[in-house]
Length: 112
Image 1 (cartoon, one colour):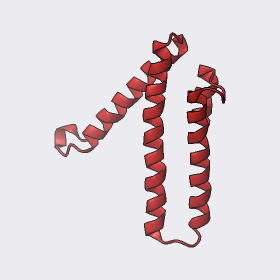
Image 2 (image 1 turned 90 degrees about the horizontal axis):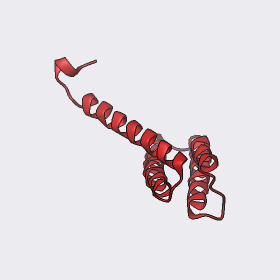
Image 3 (image 1 turned 120 degrees about the vertical axis):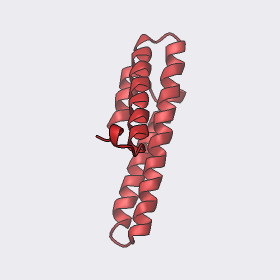
């Protein structure tokens, strides 16, 4: 939630813009899923907890993709700070993908 608030304030998005509405939607979505999953954790079994985690992670992945596209859009529109955020996100995504690649490589020379 704080991650999206940082992007909203850094890019200067208010509630009237499409990007601001998108960020607010993701913020509210995270809060609703978090509250519902915590309330449900008292009564549900492991399967439902895994379902909440999958839903939360799916929303997180969708939000990361939306931020990536949104920063690219604002960078093309001429906002310089969006360019810095786009480059930082690109590096973060590439580093994450490389780490996932090495996590699924089971040879001894790549193990760490």
